[in-house]
Length: 182
Image (cartoon, rainbow, N blue to C red; front, side, top):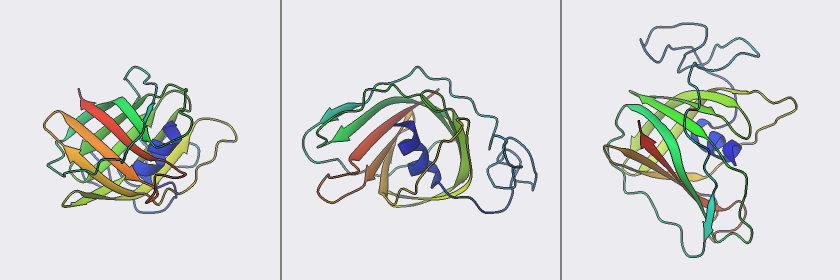
């Protein structure tokens, strides 16, 4: 579900300082890598531009990321795979992610419009995320923290996130989420 990807990428809690992702200057308003966004406003100006993608489910062990250099740019969700799950989600998802320096901004479309921003660091194939803002455009929507171990593989044209939620593939399921650079 889009909320799951949102939580993996953004952390799903709120605190931090404000930094404009484009200029690196402190700022308050839409389009920021950091926090300080007034309540009820989007975390950034990113919009979800990709076509909705229906997740697939497979058996077997979840792959682990191999690392790489995450190229700055805009990426759209092109595939999401769950591993060793008894039932597969049938709700199509759309999500766009923008990487710029150490800043990550994202927007989800279907089924729950949301924006999130934060910073990221890389150590080998491990991706460490610090969420600084999350905004969900659905009344009554809630998010929960996702303590998944995240590894990634980056190529010049793709970013693949591997979320390892449990050592045995149990609940919540391990996932592989593929984004393609636009």
